Image (cartoon, rainbow, N blue to C red; front, side, top):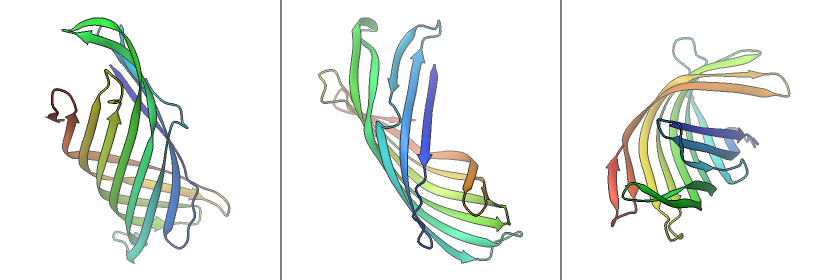
Amino acid sequence: MIKVFFILLIAMSLQADSLKMLVSFLKMDYEERSDSGDFLDSEKSDYTDIIGAELEYKLDLSKGHGGADIGSLLLSGSYQEGESKYDGFLQSGGAIVSSYKTTTDIKIIKPKVRWLEMKRGVRYDVGIFTSLAYRYWKRDSSSDKYGYLEEYKWGYVDAGLMAIFHDEKWHIGFEAAYQKAINPTLYAGVNGGLDFDL
C-alpha cells in the first residue's frame, strides 16, 4: 500500500505587523495496491483542484528562553476546498463487480495555536515551537449512486524546529516536527453511519 500526499504552499504574505495571509494548493496522489502488487484504487488531484487560504496572527509576548531573542504566540486557521478523482472497483462480498470512477468533494479545516521561541540572526533565524491543533477532513461523494461520506477528526500536538534564511528581498525556510494525534476518529456514512477510532 502506498499513500503519498503532496502539499504546495505558496505564501503571498500581506504582513501588516503580525498578520499573515497565505494561499495554499493541495495535490493528492494516493494509490493502494495489494500485497501481490495489483492495483486496488487511487485518489488524485492536481495542484489547482483543492485550493485554500490561511490566516495567521502572531503576537510577540516575551524574551525567549535559553538564548532565544523572543517568544511568540501564533493563532492560525486554514480552510481548503475542492475535489479529487477516485478510480477503483465496486465489490460485492469481497468479489470485484466492475470498475468504478467518481469525484470526491474535499473539505479540510485546521485551527492551530503555537508557541514559538526564535533566535534572530543577520542572515537567518532559528526557532523551536510546540503546537496544539485540530484537523477536520471531509471526503464526500454521496451524491453518486455508489458514493460515500467520510469525516476524519483529530486533535494533535507537535514539537519541532524551524529555520528562515533571508536577505533584503527573499525569505525561504523549513520546519520539521514530531506530531502526536489525540483521539483520531472516522465517521463513515454507510449502514446508517459507523464511527471508528483510528
